[in-house]
Structure formats: C-alpha cells, structure tokens
Length: 208
Ligand SMILES: [Zn+2]
Image (cartoon, rainbow, N blue to C red; front, side, top):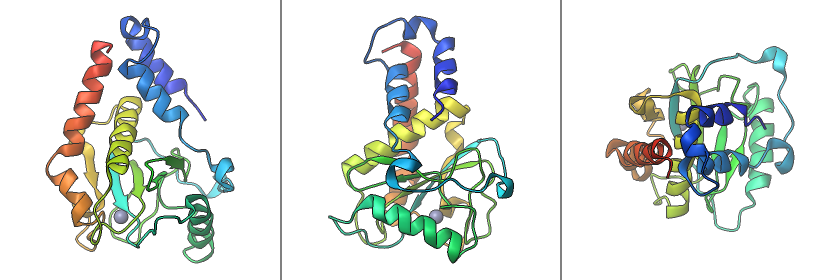
C-alpha cells in the first residue's frame, strides 16, 4: 500500500500535521491504512501488461446490484467476483477499485493505477470506482456504509485532487443503468456525499 501521496498532501498542511493525532489529515491517512489489501482477502494481482493506466480525476459510486445477505463472507464474495471478472468477462480484474461491505469495511480491489471496466457505455478511465455491496433498488444503505463512502471519497478527493463536482455515480454517466440504486443514489443527488466530503476536507484544512 502506498501512503506517500497522502503523506505528501500532509506536507502541504505542515501546521495541521504538527498536531499529534485525531485531526483530519491523520484521519484520512488512517482511512487509507485501514483498507483491506488484495492479498489479505485472497485475491491475486492483475496482469500489469494488460492494464490501462490512468490518472484519477473523478470518483464514481456503484452498487453490487444483487442482494448481499447478512452473514455473507465479504472476502469469499471478493474472490468470486475476481474470478468471475476474469473468467466470464475477460476483464483485467474486479471492475471497481474499492468494495465496501455491510460493516463499512473497505477492501482494495483493482489497483487504483489501472482504469476500471463497465458493462455500460461510459469510459471509466480517470474514475476511482467504489462499489457498495447490496442492491439499493431494494434495500437502504446502512450508516456504516454511508460513513465508509464519505471517508473513502474524502481520502480519494484529497489524494488525487478531485473536485467535489466530479463526485458522481454510475447513472450520472449512463442511461443504461439504475446503479447505484435509488436508495443510494438519493445521497448523491441530494449532495449528502459532496457536503460530507467538503466538511471532512475543511477539517483537514483547519487542522482539526
Ligand atoms: Zn455501476
């Protein structure tokens, strides 16, 4: 895991980072540090030679689109998703860079340095892709999931200098999908995520 960019971001905020703990910049470093790496859930690295490299300029939210029953092992789900993505779809890897489970834990999936994949017509190059497990046409996201989305979006926005306007969801780029599902899309449409991310970034600036 590469913490260097967030650390560099902290370097801009020398005053803020001079405080020992519990301020925004540390919190963002902690978000990145807590991401479960691919090797920990039993995934394998993707073939770098086939990867399309990109620079992150957008953050785009997705849902699984299928029910994720409580008690389902998220690590087994990730292993199945990686196998299916490669064997059935012929993709490099899981199409998303991060997956958030029912407990709000964040897992690394596709390497963020590589552009994602999609079944729809938009080009995900430049997009950091976040998948939340579940089908939000049918269920509501829980608070841990919402909090994890905010934390991850804030970390990514700070690290890659993504504008709040470029925090969107799949259906904002494609007419062919309801992803991330009505009950999660509401938080995109109503600026919940953008507002919470702005607050988090302001805390970093203020060194709180
Ligand atoms: Zn999607």
